[in-house]
Every structure is written in C-alpha cells, then in structure tokens.
Length: 77
Image (cartoon, rainbow, N blue to C red; front, side, top):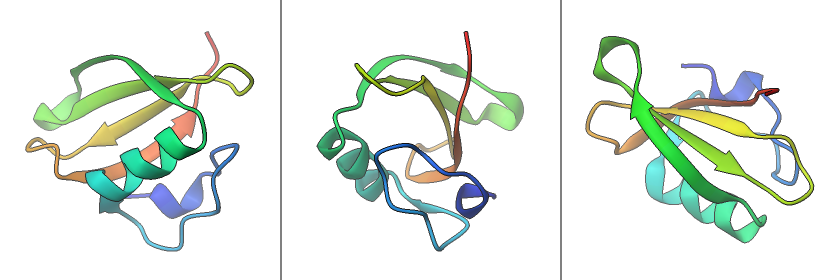
C-alpha cells in the first residue's frame, strides 16, 4: 500500500496509502489517461494499465474486488 510514495505525471501527489478506485479513475480520466488493458497480479490483485498521449504508461494495482487502488506508478516499455 504505497500509493503516496509514487508521483503520477498530471496528477496531484497522493496523501494516502490507498484510494477508492472511483476517485483514482476520475483523477486519471480528468488528466487525460485512458485504460488500455488489465490482468491478474500477485495475491489475486488486479493490474490496470493506463496510457496518455504525453506521459509514460502507468500501472495501477487494485484490490481483488477492484474497489481500492493500492499503488500506481509509471513504467517504461
């Protein structure tokens, strides 16, 4: 649970270790990100990849029920 340890370009810094998926997805969409895929992560968590026309790809890790975003960070491809 390290959402507050990563900075996502185009978003304000997170102050909490997790956030609701509704809040996170609203922030991402408003910043111009769009979902490009998803998959299963460790411990049945859900990985969701977000793309942007100007910023690097973001990988977000959701809880197994997809209600909470545990962390998110930029990745390079």
